[in-house]
Image (cartoon, rainbow, N blue to C red; front, side, top):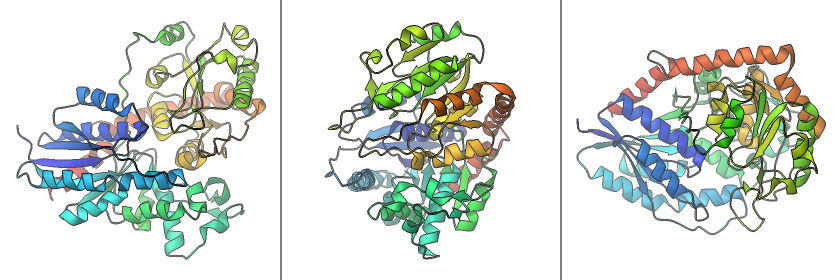
Length: 472
């Protein structure tokens, strides 16, 4: 059957953003055999992995999902990461305009709209030019969407100077949370700087111009998402959890063989996302905590990029260079230190009993899907605000450090002590509180799967979105 309708996706070119957007494309074409999706791929000048990722996606998806690599752009470096990313997206607008023009010229399939990532809202200008609907995709949860809309409303409608909240003891009623939260502890740093605030709040303003907002969450996890209507948001479609949860083959992953030898729910897994890394002092504090806890552990330890590169972390050639002397020998019977980890395969393993995480939204959703409790150690508090506060509020996580902030541009960290880490691991893995938490996570895990089944909350939300698109 030939396709009659098409959506064009514009994802932000980071793997965590791209994966969830591709998963959404899969859901759409699986549910509607007359719909196709074209994904326009931007490419960072310093990212050498995006090509292989796109090849992998293309080989694993339906023929009605196609990927188009846009010509590479090299915008001038800006004074802040947020400003650089904004200019990077802006530099691709002409290419997106041409791609949309090409699709609009086709009689079939008919272009039904543009779906843009949370960081790509300036592409809404293209939809205005061509008179087609725009939709915004939020790869994180409804809480972060609510935060952005709320802060933008405070400044634009209530004329509040948001910079005055920095260091204050004010509490704000963030949408999607039951109780007020301390502003100084959870405000994104972009809101507090004169240069980045217009960009951050500008994205929120553009959300309101879209026809709908697609969110990688599910109603049972964030029932207060309905509060967003009170902030003037367009229709919100919770479609998640949108995850690539295909467990990798054991072939080539020796660490999975090691996990096979461990007791059920006995291993604490430490992994901090694609950009997670620590300086040597923090590595030693973490190692000390693990040794004292006497828990079985699997630790994905990666080294920071050099200061003159805009790359992500890499594996240590020899991790013993930064670990305390004798640590590997002392913990040989109970723990393993590795580099990159096949996170989905590890979380799916019966031996994993807890997950010390940077609280990226995909990682949180994966831990929920596989029923693994989390200990919160957000690498970038302003980015993971929605995730770590939400899972703690719901009783799905133990705390290690809630207000940890890492300066991306200066690459400096706040030291989290061995005592704090050990205490968090024990709360995660031991005692009645840990057993109750594990029970709650299992319950939410079942709800996450049911949400995607026929008649589930996300299943019905996707049906509403498809109906909306088809009616254009």
